[in-house]
Image (cartoon, rainbow, N blue to C red; front, side, top):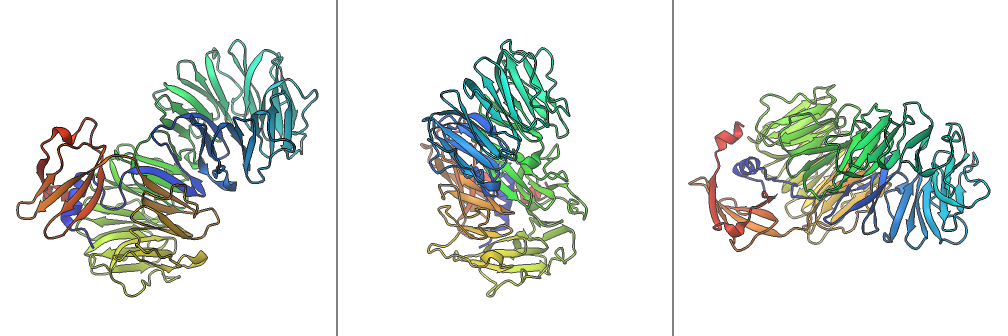
Length: 638
């Protein structure tokens, strides 16, 4: 059943979402993971892989985010009692409080012998090292350059690190020892080789701190990553990235030097309040005292798939290479492939309601009903047609874009190679839109679906009976339709069983497509996924419940899962004669979040979503009654 126009006006004016925009936390899985902090999470340390990270929380559990190549983000099932971890190119290691090791990823194996008595681990590109309580080191894995041949005497070590074909250890006498490949100068240890307290390495260079607090760098120095700035003696901790270096000072500020072609050394303001840092491949990360996480540098490395504060999100959309998410305050977050600036959010945007990620471009529906577009514009996919106003939905495909207007008409722009911009007549009475790779869908108010554009796989051949639909979704060369009775219909490309829809006795309430897998969810937010599982797209992170909306990309899904909050329902009644909305609630109750239920004699009940009111607002101090008026003319012209 379709939303009447005045409901769309109401929702836009008050910033309340009308479809798939309930507030919650991000959760991503498949080829890419997203970590979104829960209330009470405290991040103690970050361990960096090539394009993913592992975090250690204060409760001794691990979290992961980023690219899940080799299943590096699939953490051990018994996720408890960890004191540290490390990540190589293909594998990861975790150390538990009892001194035992855990390995995962591609060929993640443990060393021979008894799995106990360890106090530190480190991962090289293709080898591993572990420090025992007795000060000896055990090394295993690839040994092409002697990186596993620990020099004798193998005793008296305090710290060990590993890189690309080499290993380095710090002895109890405060000297450094290096073994393995010296192609990048890792044997050229700082002189005098004495008086060191601690050190770190990347795959190509190292940093060490002396007893007087000074830092020294050695190894590959192509971008000055070993040239430590002068007078840097108040450093608490430091990290070596791939071509740059990062240091945390006692006053909570950061210093960065070395390679800066992606801005990995441009520390965001304010440069203060940091307590943890990480440096990776062309990017940097800092954790502030309030547990907020700041990232800078190359967004294509997926390090931005982390949110340290338990903020809420109301919309998310993902494509083949990048993702957009909208925070409850309308702020847009972007990460992934930024080859055409699709993750570089323009300055001066209005708060967003919805977003859409195309192949190499991005769209945002703003609260003022206009659409902002950025990224690749080779086919005019970012040239929003005039008048750029009165939009209520957006979607993006392969080099083309769609927008649904308040008057229920559809606007399409960009590439038209398959006729995907040619909206069927009459262009009227639409309530929802969806973009595939080269085809388009429009859901009409009567519950039928119009499809146009590329039809190579039958993606425009909507199965009969073409009626009773309440939601649509499209991606790649296939589509889904949700019927009023809770059943799902699939059509188009059928690779990996995309059209083999599972059944559920209580029916589904939402649908989402990705390139090679599909998803539907129940009223309880339980996800059912079918199609390809090559990248563990079916492996929904526990608990599989509470999902409010889901978006699909290439080999991955990302969802919004409900926040654990105290809800209070506000009952709203519309009087068509007076054009007034009347609010009614229990003045004795207060809540963190207020659910909006709209009802009228003509249209029946409509659940619109959720809003978060400003801090300090409490219904307990209100009368429990209220009203406001909607002015359609003024809103539609905003």
